[in-house]
Image 1 (spheres, helix red, strand yellow):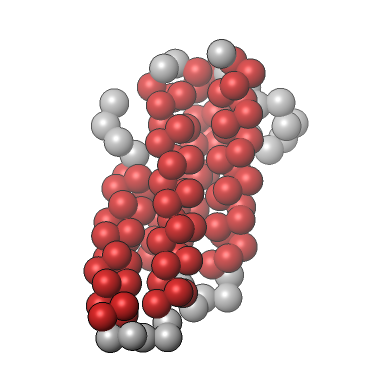
Image 2 (cartoon, one colour):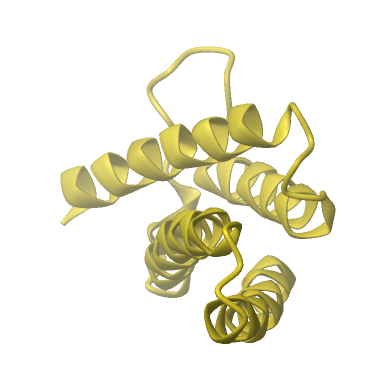
Length: 120
């Protein structure tokens, strides 16, 4: 199974931000900490996508999620996470809803991680 597109998008965005951060540090730009914060957030998102992706690869993806009505399968959860990761990568960091999307994605990743631990 190939890496999910969202993982590629997040990794690409992190690369752009690392270059921005490097430039900001050299210029002593006051916005460097903001760029670093976004890199940290995307790093968490990337790590969670990798965890979920590995669970899907291992075959744990067909088990239903206990939260009734939220997601019927872990594949649906993974697709939602991928959609959110794409939105984060494409959204400017100043966008007022970006933080909410990052929080939602982090919550979904935590659910996926706890489900993966239950199936081990």
